[in-house]
Length: 337
Length: 262
Image (tube, rainbow over all chains, first blue to last red; front, side):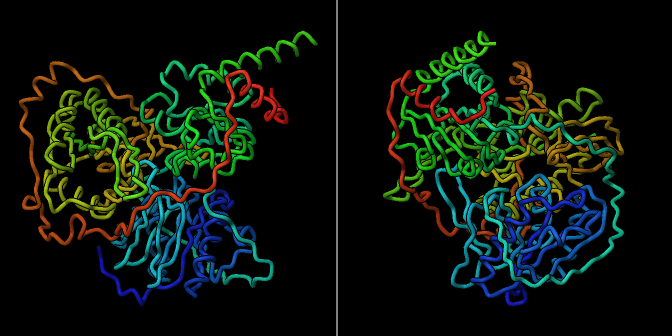
């Protein structure tokens, strides 16, 4: 750790991830949170973006209360050393006390490099941020699998780096704000050691983040084979099967199918959770779901705090009945044609 | 080719609970296992060893009992095991952990490739490998799904980013963190397990490292401090409906009535 002269560092810098000239939604969410914190600190909010085709970035941040927006024109695809150098250069110049980075693939690759570059603290996947009486950032995140919360501070070094997953913070829109000062720079950094050869967009539609309906399997599922019953239910509903983290660690489900802070953030129209207790880290990944139907045997399960339709009961009794009824409905439709 | 693989011992059950009255942490299982994500990193190393020959060294940082991680790695095919073990290393955050790993790997030798799992099940941050790469001044390939065409000088890798897969050419040495599903760990072999039991373990303490300043390690070398831990605030919970299988199914279907079921 490098002890910093804390008084030299002030303000909050938000890394605005963008690609093909489009701002990732987490950027606006982080600026919203930065604004809230900045009011408490009496400090300014800055943003930095890197990539190519950055002309429309500022218009996509309309209503965001920014003092300055730094735009670095470079290769659009993230590579570790080039991006670290660009953002580190911006931090060096600006000396922000706090740097907020989205907990995306890109952000989670970039953040630890920056934290080590400045030999300062990094707290990953924060679920809430506060300011203490001395002006330190209090970073709150679930610990020990998600049933315990930890308050973490970076007391003696700056900047204080924190990542936040998409969908956790609220974006902000202030009508009457003046435009930020825009600082544009061309960067001629290349990295001979890391050459991107091909970028292939993955086919959309398949991922759990793009579904209208999700059935979610949790620790209450007793055997791997029982997942077939839940998968059948999800297919009858025209959705997909996802899971909480416990089943991913058991190797029954893939990390791509995992909801939560350490998995994916989802917001389908309908979700049926089956045997999911509802840890903080799970709920951080799904609390924006419109209609949550939760099945759990334990009447005090935490998932019932946010479920719109809490059902206390045995998934092994309920799911087969659901499947049978859905099959009957489909059968009726079919004979009707 | 020499490959270093970082592996961690973690509690078998990642979800601890807290006594809301006393604030004491209750960890359900005290049994320790190898972090599952790291087994995939070892598998990626062993695949390279199988295809072109390599010496695979496993590094683990933890208490003396973390030696079990190395024994397990031997049973899968690892060649050498390094136990990074010193009281001064305890309580390290991302910054201090990655620094200790860098110092230890450097003390052990020169490696062409360093492999890590994408995260641990206990810390759960996925940030240590990125920090280690930066301390070592190496390019870092995150979220890797495929390692192809590896030579002494470079390799081709495929990795996930949001909504896209990227193929890149990266020169060696470098650090690669792998996705769990892409490298399914092999079963341990009985023969290797038996021979691995007798294998010497290399122990690294602070005295073996280049930087011997204890202020740089463990809790004192950490930039972050846990100020407190507390149970998550509970919001008022709705009274759940309690129904048998058929009744509950009817209730759920009526709530789903508005959904466009295909």
